[in-house]
Length: 236
Image 1 (cartoon, rainbow, N blue to C red):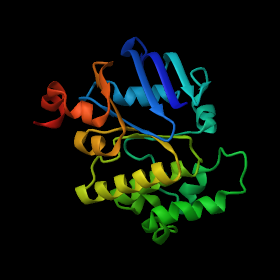
Image 2: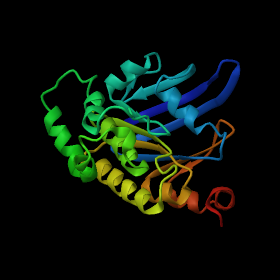
Image 3: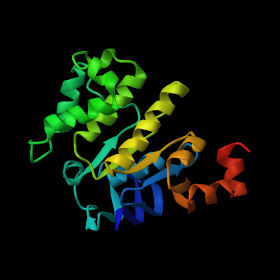
Image 4: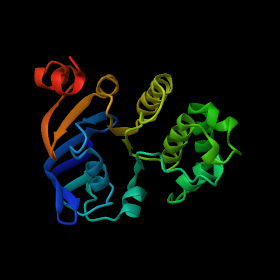
């Protein structure tokens, strides 16, 4: 079973159509990277999956349709979205931000256990747990955004440009932690990422978008072997 199945997805903003019949899959426990130039429709794809914009098509989470649900209900079903720019609540503390991540959970019994899990993956957040989120560094805010998403107990973690604006060493550290979360917690991941080589190292499946359409899909090795993709996205 797939964690996520998207079929013939059309989406946009009012009269502006951005996605034109997109098909995407994320295997259960797998990681899919979405690549493409600016304006290809990558962020729109994530927003459509999460019910944030008007869309038409089939979207299934572990075989259950979610394309008619609103954003809050999609989150309750287990889709956690980490938007570009992190979206932390700057005036709240680190721990208050994490608590907000769990607010849609129906059962609260494991919340303390999940705090401990987030702090295990991101020890820096434990050190900063009483600090206002707006005073954290960019890397710490990205860690907090991912940690808050984990507090939802997600089946699918959807990330938009997690490397944006961060130093390379911080990015490597965050992707290493994301890989551990994917493998150890069996959380399926879809990540939009401009750093193509980083995304290819992370994912087991790759989708390349161009002007709102899928132009290539395959394993990282298959995508790396595609000469057109090499020239357009990988810089060789």
